[in-house]
Length: 261
Image (tube, rainbow, N blue to C red; front, side, top):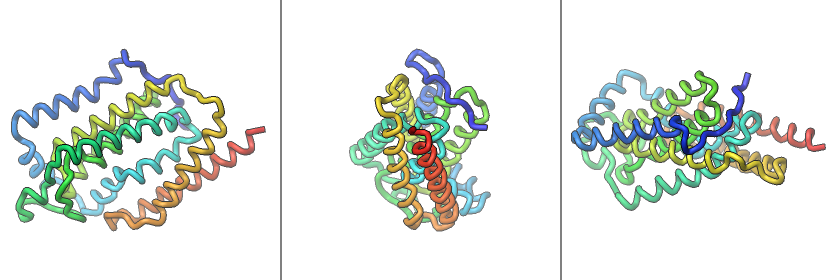
């Protein structure tokens, strides 16, 4: 059974601020203690206890095209959340691609001796801060949590998957811990701002809006189905997500058309 969509939060609700405050506290602690590099090495080495394929499949969940395609599974059950996602995506893109060129922080492969840590996949060297993958998955997780907060399982699963996806960016060797926290903060705040903005936005033409959203997500799903993933072990997962999304969107389209009269 799909969890019911809750009334979105207001700016005064403490549930909106707990997660970003924890992220800011962790960010400040790591920054002031100078433990960014040592923590990276600790997590990266610990991650080698699991197969590379595990981390490749997790990290692909933070790919922006995958994250947007995952919204297809909420088109029917949580339309308000999907509408909020349209704004959240724009805000997340501004956060990530505004800070990356401005700060121009080097990634671990450009700073550390390759013999010191484990790299999975491409060894990206520039544009480290913030982590785009972490921002994307925490945008989705934030939207799910803020719109389905009456369902504890949904909250736990969203936080768990988002956190593991973020940690996978250290496991594959391309991001520092501070990158993850900044990405998570930006993603969560984008979801929160979008949720508040769209709290009472229902639109004048909900069916037309719904079909346009379905078309947009369908284009993303088709693209995802055709492109080769950056991490080859994630090929099957990526295709399963894309195919399942197309099925869900097809059903949503049929429901939109058959109930329009």
